[in-house]
Length: 577
Image (cartoon, rainbow, N blue to C red; front, top):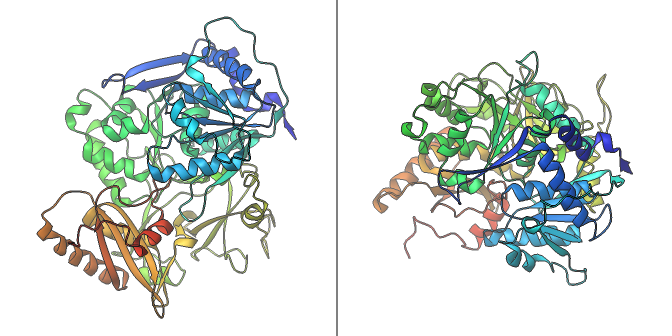
């Protein structure tokens, strides 16, 4: 099935090049070349012309529908390569540059799964990237194109117009509970979901996004949120995008805040941990003379949003005029292209404390203090959401915890060459749909959620649910308690015991402390978990920063943490050898 050119990603890019040829499209700020930031900008017409050159070169490697992997550092070349692959009618496959050993298997797995005929990369890393060209010796090795060496200056005709396949790209999800899988994203998915996203995030603006909107993003382009925010939203709005690398952000989180303050009507997105880093590692002098009053939207998504983070962030930057309403806790996933729901615009996020005992038996009931603090992801408005009992497939009433199911044209087409998993997760059917609710197909997200006061609250992943002594415990809740003592990433996991399961917590200690204090930290955490969650902690392992295995989007891989723990794979700070 083919997509119509005018209703496609190439069609949208062509429209921008025709209507706004001289407007700046993307600016990439390189902090490796210059610690102060070296900015390279391209206009919409320049982007369009370069994309044509890449598409023409790619056409020599195969045919429309073939896969083209993008395996390059975060850069302007990455954006151009991704758009060039789609322009050529190839199915783009954005992947991460393997910087740690644990990522190698994912790149190899995605290469083997997608069987690319070409790999788009840069001259600086092509030798490293070629190591992944033979993921499967039974497959023909792909051709490698070094995007930065192509001749963009000589006049050339536009790439031949091709019949675009319905599929635009494969979004490989790293997955914290299962092996990576390629989500099949089509042109309509992108155009529809970005439209839904913009409608909801700008609901407090009667005329939509301000005319001087600027996108600011350091999120990796191989991640669904990084791709949509950094590449597609600018294209949809016809506004400029200021981009940098995740490494540049991690080295100096203040750079993110500086870019937000230095540009107009800014829109940005990041996971919760990034807001914590910005609080702890941005000095007043970093923002001297700058004003955050022009920040319009800050999506907080991709991992659990902590109320303490929202409060700390807003309090820290209130002195620089950051609007308390800018932070927008959100829920989404690659299987739904990216966006599902976000907190309401024009007001600060909603925080509610729920009774732990009631949550343990599947119900959300407000309590005055203590309890589990959850942050609302708002009322689903542009997308169709239901909370469903995963066993009976019946819609849950408000206040009852169940699996979040999604329906609509923003839902992707399934997993690449994986009909069994596609059928399992993308073809949900409701047993007794209520009036106005379709029977199917529904995307089963695997996320536990609840509707409370007409707003969606996400509890955690079904597969991560801990059952200890016959009671349900949500790892996110336990981890939120522990992080207040340790500061770093935390994994709450259950380990099989003779008769049941036992709770184990592995925590990265963010700051160096005197070894004599480790036992005190362990005692405080053990007591807090017992008092707050009414569960006995069987083992509490303190480890150094960077010890916990992560997905490519920075989430803790709990299943992998279980295996590491059981094989004594963690180097513990609290155990002397």
